[in-house]
Length: 267
Image (cartoon, rainbow, N blue to C red; front, top):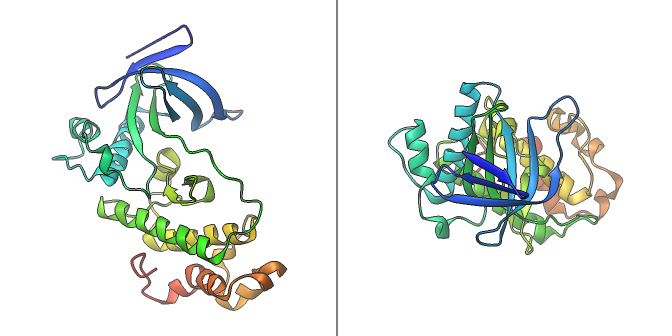
């Protein structure tokens, strides 16, 4: 499947495409005691295309199959490719689709998936690379609502592709283009482990994302599980300069959706 020499990794993706990848830098190193995934910036020397390579380790044959199917589902959401079933041949059919020019702006683009069967077994997702901006200051009301629209659009595409819920919608899994267009990422092992979540969990997770964008810091632990009456006590003092519309959105996403039939469409 692969040959590593001269600093290059040569491998064939599930799509059938031949890749010649050069390591540029590590983005997320392996953690001590083992890591579910590592992420690196690589360059395809055949085309000069820079990609983000996310390597996911399979603990078993079944886990490896799930990671491959995750790639097919991701591609399906992006190009609306349809396979007869979710078998591995069906996954290959989806991954071979030549409709990448139709890829939506609100989902991180998956270019290919490479499978390594030698120990340790792993799957590498080759996806678009987006240098991330640093949000040192809170965003404007218009910027926040634009990001919310992008994320909702991406989630609806996933639901249409058969995903019950993203389940792992956190700040690290939303990527941003140079124009602050938001794209949903975070596919792979951690999302699969959150597969018991529902669309309502995605709604409250979106609320936590808005909190972080507005206040430039992590939400307090347990914020989305607190009572609505306690909401004001968990908003930082700087909320005085926050748009009333953004505060209303936060309350809706974190609390009001629990007692309403609120859907991502309605958001």
